[in-house]
Amino acid sequence: VFPLEDTYCQHALVAEGPIGYHDVESSELRGQPCFEKFGFKAYVGTPIDVGGDPFGTLCFAGDRARLEPFSESEFSLIKLFAVWVGTEIHRDRAQAALRESESKFRAVAENAADALFVHDRAGLILEVNEQACRSLGYSREELLGLPVVEIEEGRSPDDLDHMWDSLTIDPMM
Image 1 (cartoon, rainbow, N blue to C red):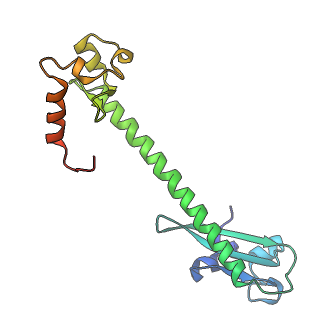
Image 2 (tube, helix red, strand yellow):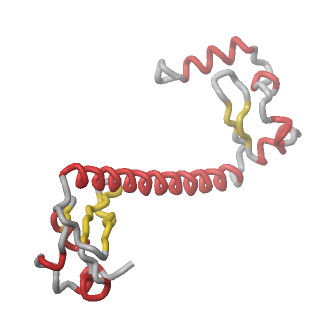
């Protein structure tokens, strides 16, 4: 990682798309700190966006000039790579946010004074908190996978189906 002002990447960010210099030594970038420090004589780079926000750049630089300018297909390829990298970073951030949200939900649920049950449409218990276990006298392992009808006194499976149907907002659920 280098200060942006010392790199060719600052130009890719301003251009808002792929740029390439096949022979930096004979371009306006010749006096740039990046050329002076590293001697990069060829450069191609493009911005990386993450969720619509600028994140950085993806670039390739070489110590030898190219004979020919970068082609449109090379620009398209690096742009495709940058989209892929940006998508992966966005996905990783979303997964981290989901893990954090799940962790917070679990902490709230586990410390709730009320018994909490999560079950699927078939009525099988998928998750419980500690209060649910204490109030029924079951271990967590005993409750997981148990049909709700076995712990719901005075209700038949048909009664529970009717109740769940009345609560369903989206008919696709």
